[in-house]
Length: 132
Image 1 (cartoon, rainbow, N blue to C red):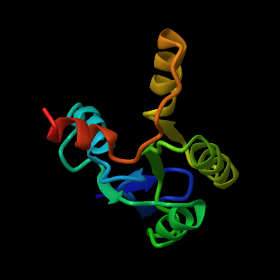
Image 2: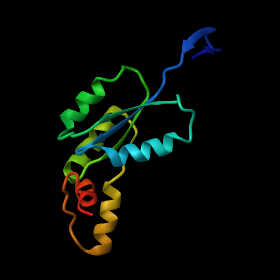
Image 3: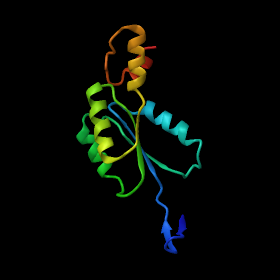
Image 4: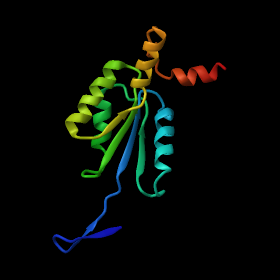
């Protein structure tokens, strides 16, 4: 789809944004949230790409670097490790990429509510559902 830039009278190609779903497990939780939110928009309004099994910031940076340069993006992530969440958040801030930590705030609230420490186990939801 092209638009006319009225300041220059040039036709400019619109670049479709991409939403990156990144997780230290399969990423099903984050993907479900992103797809639910994306359903509020035209079906071709954005692309969604997933990076499962991210173990460190290098994995995340490599994945982001592999995306088309100049393409608008946002990151939705679920990491169980608090340090990895922090490091990824800092890396994304440095790059100017908006992001949402879908798991960290929920775990923090539940830890405060229960007074218990989270297990920080990767794939805990998948394991729990498999054992029901």
